[in-house]
Length: 243
Image (tube, rainbow, N blue to C red; front, side, top):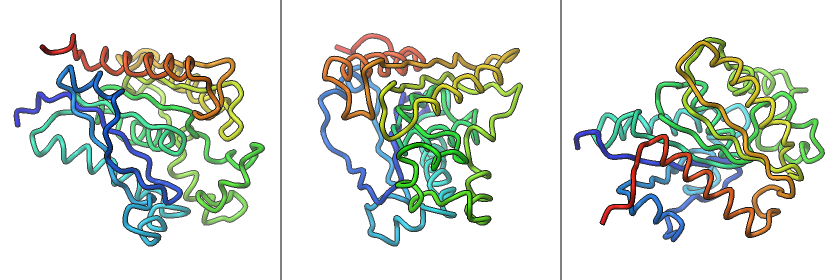
């Protein structure tokens, strides 16, 4: 436990979805280079029942981000790794998690990949699919919900002159669930914020014929994953596979 282990942490924490460890052959690209892949179980998910979910939705959403940061902090304090050797990855609701995490704790990680995420929480319900997200996030029409949404909305909490970590946003032009505008405006906001600092780079990868993960063709999904994992490995300086 010397803090030298390079680690990629994945999280979701929403909609009562269970995020359970399983063998994914694609993750061999990390394991072959000695990089650990960690799956975080967070409030908002369904791993421990509906009460666990409700502790991380609506006005309790900040609990999800606090849980994820607690995982990162534990890996550091227990001596497994340190922020310079830690990357995070997530998509959709997990993209919101990525945005909230590095905006609230910019020094906690060395790199971020965020797929098809939501970052402007005050405009979620304005998108065609937005109404379906109200039971999870709440509505700006409710004053209590509005205050909670504004407090953690990644886009609204970006601060100019902050050295945010390298981030790769991945989106699809034909995403029916999350408007690609979310990734575009977050990219532009962060690019402006890191000017004059040692932060970034802040990159955006847009797939012309892609949707919300499952709406993408196999070739494009492979290309997206390749670019995302290459970005993380480069930022972590993971090097070639170990023999």
